[in-house]
Length: 328
Image (cartoon, rainbow, N blue to C red; front, side, top):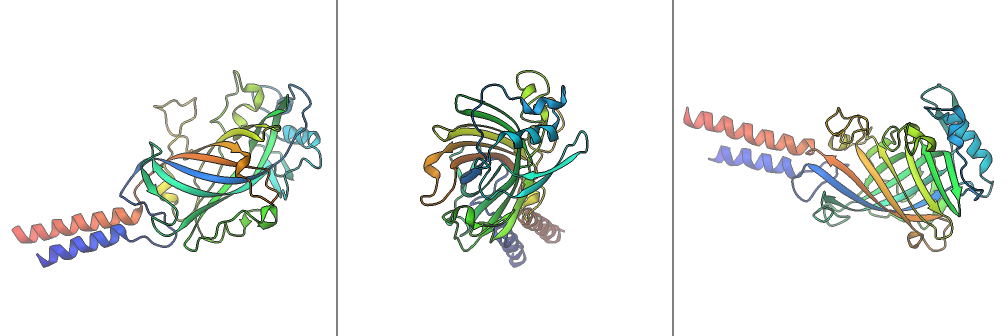
């Protein structure tokens, strides 16, 4: 009996012990989740010059000429309209192999306000109360290659949105420094000072198709789509992203989402999360130069954290070994 207790105790210890840099839920769980975040954004502002612009379609159908679209957008925006503190990135057209080095059009920071089950209500993780940590996000590198601007509203398509999620057990998130808090293209004080638990990049082929309503709006090349009302400073957008690194990559790299072409019964194409956001000017930090703020729900799937699975395995295998010896 003592041996059995030892095995069970070991299993429970392993199941609840979380290494540094691992998101710990308040209960064993795997499956669909909703991650809610609040963020502060920098973005390029384009002048209202009528409808349509159709910059992405310079290369003709069916695939947009990505590089030509970026070049046209760079001519369209004004110097003052460029995203504040924008950094240089290199974009490669996957169809032609041509590349261009240009300034990014969007970047920002965010804090995870909660992780929930698929219903968006049942709590799995909250900052501070679940494991004593905060989860912070930085995103960067997005470049616009298409826009339609009409009556003060711009509809934009872009590529190259990168992100990283950090876990910090000394909570200090703040966007009060505005653009001055950015120290490198992927670094921001009070945001990137923890352990990187997730990182990845946006994926093409999920938002638009090369035929139909959105074929002229960037088609399947689009990785990030948004619309923005310059008068009210409101809007929305979406992207599908891969998980490509971080200490929790295995938990979140689930290939959850399919392209429209593959259908629900097709083979997963590798997108792991779906970002959707609604801009809200009330989220901006007073006294700083942030353009807008957003509420961003992120949909994803998770699989059990590896150490939890190891603990269950050792517990079951230990119990099995004990029973075999006990009843042999």
